[in-house]
Length: 334
Image (cartoon, rainbow, N blue to C red; front, side, top):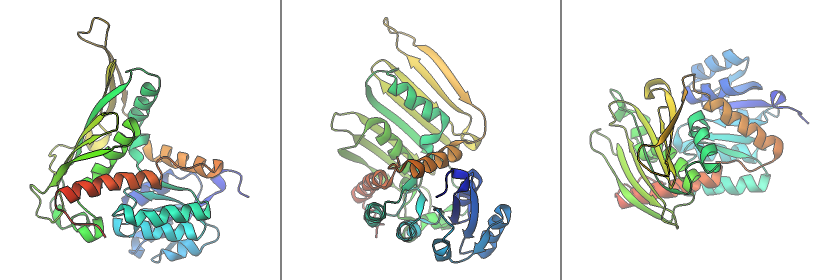
């Protein structure tokens, strides 16, 4: 029985940018790295003293591997995760976890049957400004929540409409299933389940069969609302999340890097109203969300607890995505 996180061994399936971030954030040993591009697998394996392979099944066949990071294209996320769970591995799978809710249902069933932990990589929950917002809300700093407003987007790059994200068979959709799922997940985390889903997805600019913008209005059973906009025609990269309570407001902006410095402003409403009392926290360092999320995953395993967000959360997020695509006549899903 391995007694600490540093004794656990991990395998990486998908050695692109996100796979490399996961490997860097893991405190234990990376023993095997898999990627269809063997050179890419070899490059990451060399950094960690691991074995490279072009066959992801070899990661699951390795008895030394305790947990697996799955960071492939969307079309294979669910199938690989299910196979890993059935091989007895714990899994951190990248968001959105699948192309559709239906693809994730067997993953949830397998995790229950094998008593394996499966965390879905909605790492934005672990950004320090968003963690700070969670604590302030839990402490009652802005009172009962009324609604939130969020925007998230980037401007793409030359040839973006010819990359895999523009191929619905691989991606399951466009900007909504790419960055929009983060907004939906955060909205559910703060407000709770949504019972009403309105909005639409549209392709305004890019020459591709998937959406480049999505506009959502989601409501809970109590009438709390989330007004969301995800865009890959955001010519200056942007992240903005504003949370409104009866006694104040939280304004989160930036994610570091090209999105600008991460910060949160707390506007406390005064009894006489008028200009609020303002407190600002800034987080100028490197992105710590990856390490914090991996640490939470290791605690899931150690404590045998259900991950949050887990497969059930990802299923609910994807149900929202699918409803918006249905309303918008985008038929992407397997």
